[in-house]
Image 1 (cartoon, one colour):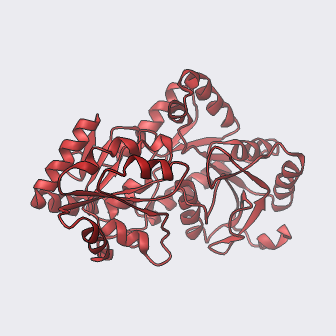
Image 2 (image 1 turned 60 degrees about the vertical axis):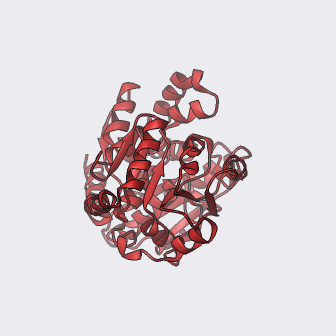
Length: 385
């Protein structure tokens, strides 16, 4: 790719986005990158991402960097910027594209290396920290290293001019481990793409064919990985009249299928939204479940909220800031509370309907158009700092 073709001679600011993942890989980070590029028409944008990514995103060019598969995490490729040829390619992008500001997304090594090399060229860095490595450590048997991982996370973001966090709860956690220059910026949602208007009877028919006595459909949309704590939802899948529908893929797909074999659970695998499949699944569910305590924001919870679906969630990090307890859903301190609230929603369809309407209204506050205006202001402020 000739980087001279990536921008014009006009005076639009040049933005380099460095992301640990991008479409077609399915993750919260990929979703954020994809949505961001839809709203940056007033910027000259170039994107750094793994070579598993598309070559363009919403007509914005992508420099696809060599990556390697992560053996412990199925489907995810990572860029190792310490490799000389990869580092050289990042430097070339910086020197030829000459960004006015760099936006890094994800807290691992591609983001931190891009930020470090950018800072050495006096380019302002805005880093979006949306991965809670401290909590992840516990789920992967590294809890005793949580303090060291907190320090590593801070070190990885050492070059940032500003570090963005997506919720008050996560802001508090990073502040406690010594982060400075923190700035809160909420993520957004496409309020037309995720809307009650997408409700169909297809999901209900699929469920009733297998479980005719179903009263409520509980939806889970997630990467199927240890830190998502989906196994904690097993008792809910055995409740009378309750059927779980699990959407997603990941390293624990087969394990979870075996664990939930004795329950009323349907695994649909990964779904994208090219034909509004995901939008229809959200809007057609009765309850959305999230047991993860590692979410820095919880984009799936917001997608469900905007779709008008009451959410029953574990009290953890950023998702607690999306759900309004006893109005748009329930925030639960333990498994027993999750079970009780699901039973309550199952047995009270009128209350469920009221929560559904309230959830949709709450979701409207997170329109991407609004939050992207906030991000652009932060980027411009960093340039002019």
